[in-house]
Each structure stands twice: as structure tokens, then as C-alpha cells.
Length: 241
Ligand SMILES: *Cc1c(COP(=O)(O)O)cnc(C)c1O
Picture 1: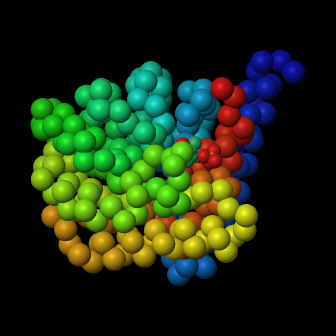
Picture 2 (picture 1 turned 90 degrees about the vertical axis):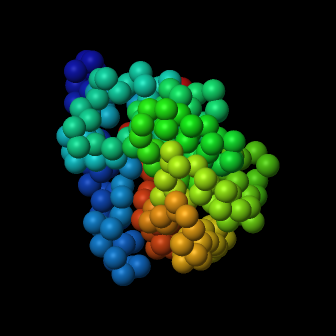
Picture 3 (picture 1 turned 45 degrees about the vertical axis):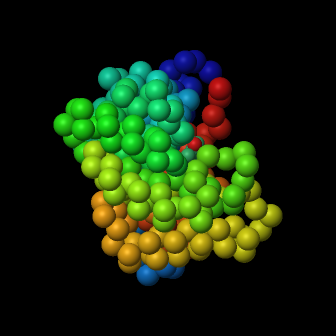
């Protein structure tokens, strides 16, 4: 295949995938008494070439997510970002906070008071308020980032003092599960935590984003109450590292 026809094929795949995903989103949203419009659909663009990201944007994507600070900053100038929000979804180290604060619309991966304080400090320095989500390690997995579920409320309480940021909700990646029932338990636990903590009206906490669901499980996540999903490989194909 020539270079050109390979790119054309890939563009068509992206168009087809987006159409299929949007249909699934609408179906899952309806099953939980909502509409497609209630679900914020993020295209996860890690390892994806800018021309394909721009194509997804041309096809209506208005929210993109990257894992790594460096990759986000490198690609940003090459993207058609007019009207497109961009979030950081990967783990953030304190020493990188100054580079990313103010460069993204939201940092979805805050999981300690230390990183929250650093983000807040950098935001105040830049004279902005940085929107963030708190990442929860819902499966209590050693190997994963995110704060343990039982510590979420304390952390949110302490984040009240971080006036350079605004907590907009919660993010989670569930463990790999053997079946849908087990998977949905994790999603439902997250949803309950989101509603419970939201009802407490903590200072500086606005619980209106529940970010969960990826390529393999976004339907289940939506049916369990997610209103923000993060889909990568189902749009762009398998990642090549
Ligand atoms: C890579 C990634 C995704 C998307 O994963 P896919 O399975 O490719 O959809 C979502 N969220 C986070 C935090 C990720 O790192």
C-alpha cells in the first residue's frame, strides 16, 4: 500500500470507529436514563500521530487526553485545538507540575495532597485556577496509582486549602475483571462515592465529573453512572510504542 492510501484507510477507520462508539454511548446513556449529550467523550491520544488526532477532531471530537506531560506539550502546537479541551490523564510527578499547570483544561490524576499542593502553588503563581479530578484506586491494587477509596474524603477535605485548584470530580480505572458483574461492582462503588461525597458540599469540591470507562468497558461504565469516558484504542487502533 502506498503511504497515502494507508493514511486514507486509517482516516476511514477512525470515522467508522467514532460512529460505532457514539451509537454505543447513546445506547448505554439511554439505559441509564440519560442522553448521548450527557456523556463527555474523550479521545485518548497517547502514541497517536497528530494527523490522526486532528482527523478525530474534524470528526467532532471536542476533548482529548494524554498520559504524559512531555507528549502533550510536544503535540499541542500541531493540533487543531479550537474549541477542543485537553486533559492530562496520566500520573503527574511534582517536578513536572509547573510545566503542565495552565496548559491543560483538567488534570484527572491527582492522588495525593503533595501533588495537589504543588498544582495549586503553580496555578497561583500563574494567576489561574486549575481544574482537577481525584484519581481513586478503586480496586486497591498495589501496582496502580490513585488514592485508596477509604482516603478519598480526607484528601478532598484537605484540598479545600488548595485555592489554586478546583476539584471537579473523580476518576478511576477498575481492575481487570473476569466478568461484567464484578466489573460493574467497581463502577457502582465509584458512583456511590461520587454521589455520597458530592452531597457533603465540601469546600472547593464540585462533584460533577465521574471519569471512568475505556475502550473495553465504557458501556458498562456509563450504565453505572459515568458521565465522562476515556477511549483510545477503540478509536485509533492498537497503540504502537
Ligand atoms: C490509555 C488510557 C485510556 C484509554 O485506554 P484504551 O483502552 O485504549 O481505551 C484511558 N484512561 C487512561 C488513564 C489511560 O492511560
